[in-house]
Image (tube, rainbow, N blue to C red):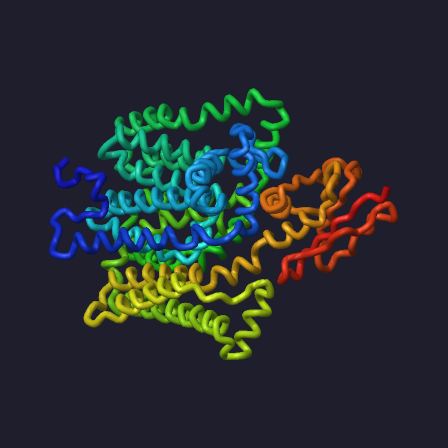
Length: 546
C-alpha cells in the first residue's frame, strides 16, 4: 500500500497534493463545522419532548444517583443505556459554574457531533480518495433533518457517533484490519451504551454480511477485524449488562421491554426521508444511477443503509430522530455525485438551496424586525400572539452574530465566477448554518418563551403549601414529569401506577378535547396554569381538605 494512502489523523480532510488555498479551504470547513455545532447548544431551557426527560436523568446522576439504573423524576428510566447521560453529567459538573446546568450538559451533544463529523470526513476519504472528506462532511451538514436533533439533549446523538465510527471502521477494514477492529468495537460499544440493541444489531449485521456478499471484504484479515472488535466492544458493553443483571430482575425486564417496544414503520421512514435527507438523497440516487454497484465504495454505504433501514423499520418507533443514522450512508453515497452531476442539474440544486435558505433567512430577519420595532404591525401582532410570554429585548451580540452570518452567506453564494458542482454543496451547507444560526440568535428568546415549562412550574412551586407529604400526578406525560423534577424539584407519584390517592396534593394534567377529571369534594383547587401559548395542555393542583 502506498505511503500516500496512510491516514494522517491530524489532517483528515487534506488532499494528497495540496494546492494553493487548500489549507484555507480546510480551515474554513473546520470553522463552518464549529459554527454549525455550537449554535443552539446554550441559551435556552430544556425543550419538549426529549430534553426534559434527559435533564431529569442528568440531575439524578449529578445528585449521586445510580449510573446502572438512571432515574427520571424519581422512577427507573431504562429506555436508553446511560452513556449519553453520564457524558452530559460530566459536562454539567465541569461547566455549570459558567453555564446553567442544562446548557452545560448540552455541550456533551457538541462533543458527540464533533466526533460524528470527524468520522464522516475520514470515511469519505477512505471510500472515495483523499480530498473527498470535505464533500462528505458538507453534504451531511446540509441535511435538513439533522440540524435540530443534533443540538438537543438526546442519547441519539451519541448513538450517531457510534454509527459513524463503525462505518469508518468497515471502510478501513480491508486496509488496516487491526485499527479497524479497534474502531469498530468502540463504535459498536458506544452505539449500544447510548441507544441499546438496535445500533449493535445493525453494526453486527453489516460487519457479518460484508464478507458474505462482497469480495473486497472476503479475506482472512476480516476475522481479525471481527475478533478485535469483540475485544474492544466488551469494556463498553459488559460492565453495564453485568451490573444491570445484579439489580432486581424486574429492572432487566423493563429494559428488555423498552428494547422491543417499537413497531413496523417502513412507510413512515420512507416518507420521512423524502424531505429529511435533502440534499443527500437526490445526489445518492444519481450516484447509484451512474456508477456500477460492483465498486466497494458503493457496496458498503448501500448495504449499511439497507441494514439500518431494515432494523429501524421493524423495531423503531415512528419518530424522525430515529432516522438520523440513515443520513450517514446517504451522505457517503452522495459524495461522488458532487463531481459527476451534470452541470445543469448541479446549478438547479444550487439555486434551489440559495432560494430556500435565502427565503428562510429573510423571513427570520423580518420576524425579528417586527418583534423589535412593531412594524409591520400585523406581523408584530402575530409574533406576539404566538409567544405571549416573550418581552422583546434587543441583544447587540445576537444582532452582530446574525449580521455576520448573513454577510458570510451572501459572500459565499453570490461570489462571481464560482459556479461549479462543489459550489452547490458548499452553498447548501453554508445556507443551513446561516438559517440555523439566525434562528438560534434572533429568535431564540422568542422560541424559549413559548416552549419552556420553567415559568409555569416555578409558579406551581410557589403555590405549594409550606408543609405537605407528597404529590400524586395524574395523566402527566414523561416530559412534564421531567420538567417538574428539574424546574420545581417535584417528583410526583403517578396515579396510573398506584391506582390510589395517598398524597395530600393532587396534580392533574388536562388535555384539550377531553373531559376534565373532578377529584371530588375532598379536594380544593389551590393552583392552575399552563404555558402561555399552549392550547393543548393545562394543569390543576388540588390539596386534600383537612
